[in-house]
Image 1 (tube, helix red, strand yellow):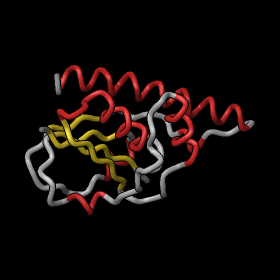
Image 2 (cartoon, one colour):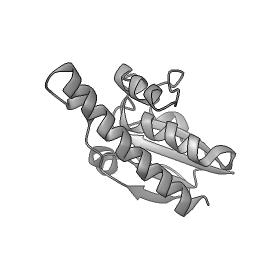
Image 3 (cartoon, helix red, strand yellow):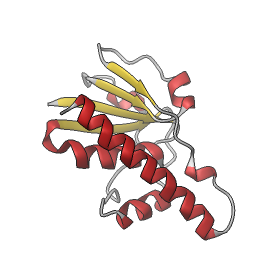
Image 4 (cartoon, helix red, strand yellow):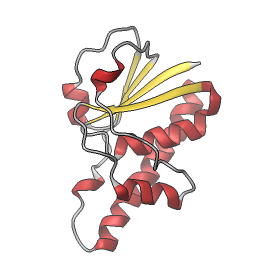
Amino acid sequence: MKNILVLCTGNSCRSQIAEGYLRHFAGDRAKIYSAGIETHGVNPKAIQVMAEDGIDISGHTSNNVDEYTNIPFDYLITVCDNANENCPYLPGNFKRFHYNFPDPAKAQGTPEEVMDSFRNVRDMIKEYSRNWVAQNIG
């Protein structure tokens, strides 16, 4: 079984969504973790848009990457430029991937426009996660 870490700035939106989809697509072929270089708590809007797609992330917690230094990761996926550029040293020999998704928590506008931003990012991460698992986990 492969160990996969998804890393973002605050472990509140993008990495939480990616953790949910990677778990969904990888099933029992991988153990998925998510963390941030900071912790901001799981964003309720991320929970809501994932529930709309049938994925429950309401039990996820916001974790700091330092909590996982003793786990031998096979893969590290950074989902924002800030985490990619500021990732602390992690021991081990893992393969690193990066994709900079927009931060839906920074969306502005009406409540519906903000939720549309969350849905758009969710759909981008879903497609990325589906393809990533197909190419790397099988």
